[in-house]
Image (cartoon, rainbow, N blue to C red; front, side, top):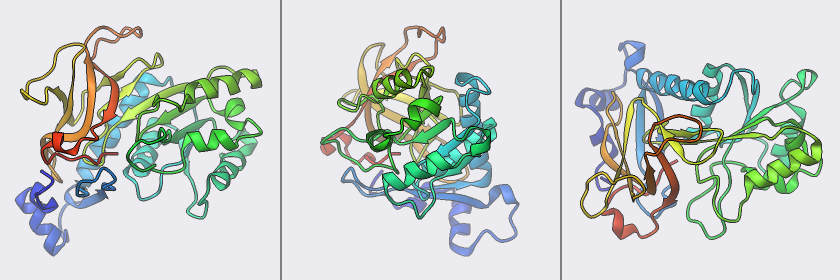
Length: 310
């Protein structure tokens, strides 16, 4: 897959319009979003194209995910820390707005964690209480491959001497890398900050997706695995030797299939491996879950699959 030209993944008609322009087409068929992976995994960066109709379906799916897991009113004013050119920034902004919250992104001039923290503390309609939600990359464990997708939660917690997050942030939505990576202890640090502030525990939700495909899964308030969700993308966990779907409790490669009017991916290895769990969750949901998602660092195992996701 990584050896193919990106435009080959488009339907023939869309590919031709990419060359000549989308003039005169109905709005829903025009190219609406284009995202490129960072290539931080060591493999060739991949480009993904979305028509307006594609994007609207994905945004509606993300809003539905949020509505299923985050009770309306739990958060109302959300600060989006994802870098403006990253898929996470656009998707979180559109999805969370569709869900029902106001969303403000980190300003382009805020280039350091300290400056982003200052905007977090001073924005969000202060007269109404300021921000009460965060959409943010979690941070990277020491020695982990990849690049942060924006100012991350780990760096803000290190600087938050006034404990703004512990006092005010009721919901944190992470994406871009595993939230519970060894050594970060993000939930524990935030909950300790909540306790110091005399505030209720902040709720954490991790959303799983890629520039090639999103959203794929989200965890519930119990944080014991990410629930695979029904939507425009079908997610499998396959044994890397047999290519067959693994059974409950087994690990395998995360593979996606997404058919749309923009880029199309069929049984596409995104560069992660995970444990597949079918046992019911403590929340009562019975949808399959992904646990212990990790990057595949031995590139030869991917056999030219993509190692660069969100």
